[in-house]
Figure (tube, rainbow, N blue to C red):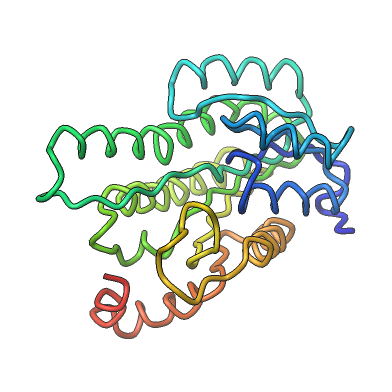
Length: 249
């Protein structure tokens, strides 16, 4: 058990499945209590049954601003000791901007922006005073190698992850200046075997491995965690950015 995490309360977003489920399981194993936030009550109930008293579940659609406005005061009131926020919830939709009807592309784009960016930023800002009130706190934003080099099939998803990367960096600067007891970690994901990536790509890593690397980086307070094959992308993009872009495209 890691002393940097034991006894702390963590909020994890993302349906209580895939990476979110593994993050919750591993945080509990490290001695944390978890507040799991997601839309699907079946998944949340399954995690509640598995985690028992170590888990509290909250149903919320983080793509909807009204839901975040409801969630923030609830968390602040019921879990004033919250000291870890993991923004894991995300949506990736492939879209052909020239083959799909414009209206359908706009709807898909708004869904991705709402959850991946607006939801992440709004929840973070809403809970920041609560996190700042603790003696130590951690914010983890799940990003992607596609923030570094985008792929053509998911333009909006890639854009939201690039924005997440920029937000994480700027937030880290402000924390360093005004609240140095808050660490901000960006986890740059490789391709992970989840429901969201079903039928896409190859050479995927397991959600368990991805979560293990994120939790290790969280415990160490790393500013960046390059997960799985994203480590190679980091080096390749530095040395041969045109090659990295071609591969990721």
